[in-house]
Image (cartoon, rainbow, N blue to C red):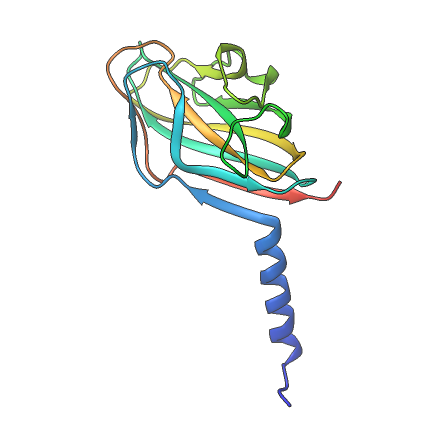
Length: 172
């Protein structure tokens, strides 16, 4: 019979519990945008299961010119990868250095984000970062995908590799 020391058992239980309750997800490559069409930011996708509630912060590092600026949104998808309006309920907002919010506190999760569901910032610097914070309640198994684009088409806006999501699952 194997003996497991209580200290090791506590570590194993704690690590497993933390793995189920928090996630850190990294963007796996730079994404360069020259248009105002929202596209997925590679790797910034939070998987969720039906009935789960998550609080999250998405840290986005970028370079852009003052004319292009940027906008961000989230896309709700079911487990088959199909966009769906019914998968999520919740809101998200945006903040960053010298970044006035144009639409953050009212943005909601939808299948195909448009102007009303994106958050936009104005930046006078070439390199910066911003944070999207939010809460989501999943009504079916699926994911939320972080999306980005230019606010105004001009030059190139690059969403940098190693941007990341920190997420915490909460009990309801």
